Image (cartoon, rainbow, N blue to C red; front, side):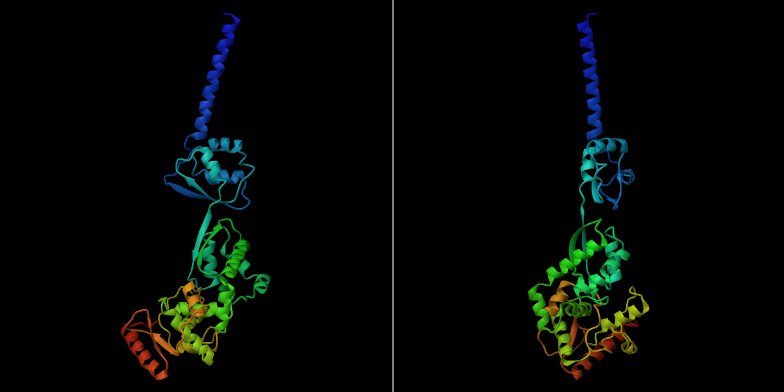
Length: 346
């Protein structure tokens, strides 16, 4: 065999080997490397995780971690690990997986109707990396509260119910700072002026709105209820709001899961700054997170001469309003007779 044939044979073998290796690489890179049945799954990489941590996180979802690692090394992923929430789709190849692990997907947080800061922090802490303890600590930080005009009692008024996008690995402080920014966006000059026209600051408007929110689920009735409470404030009357008494009971017993459908006369005399039967003016803080309609009701109340109201037995969910105590007593007796007939003892 002459030298040309030897060279030619070697060249053919080399090319064949290269082709085979190239095919092998293509298989490694472009074939599916997922092993979950769902169409999509999210994986979470905690703050300060390294590449070894990521491999452990991915192992339950990836068929062959060595294949993934080969592509990850080629694309310098081990040196550029990101914390966050990442979306994996069924059938992804290794290039897709590396790309996915570089794209932090925001979490959509929707919240409303929380009764107190601790409940709210628990709700948020279940959706992002920061836990409820760190969230409460960040929100009630004395320097932060002083700089923004809040107290520990009323700082809960900072949160405006809505849907927000945040990254899963958002820290407690960054979440708090985002919320105070959203608070300032909501409280435009126009809204501040409307609150002032009612004799209220934004915090006071939120406290009153929390009572209005708890008094009625009927959004179309809330401006009327707000008007009644504002009438009482102007007259120097106690607000006499049953929801504040319910809140006081829950706070005293530290049981915010209990359901209280009825307030008794003995409850009205309990000692609490939240008992608006015993104290004139607003309670020290909100009794719930009011939604936007309740806030707008306080800022745009119905102008009326009503002083009293109680639950209606004819229009479920609505109330009967009165300008005099005599009228109110008739409505109140009708409701008391009805609720007694229902056997509601608490």
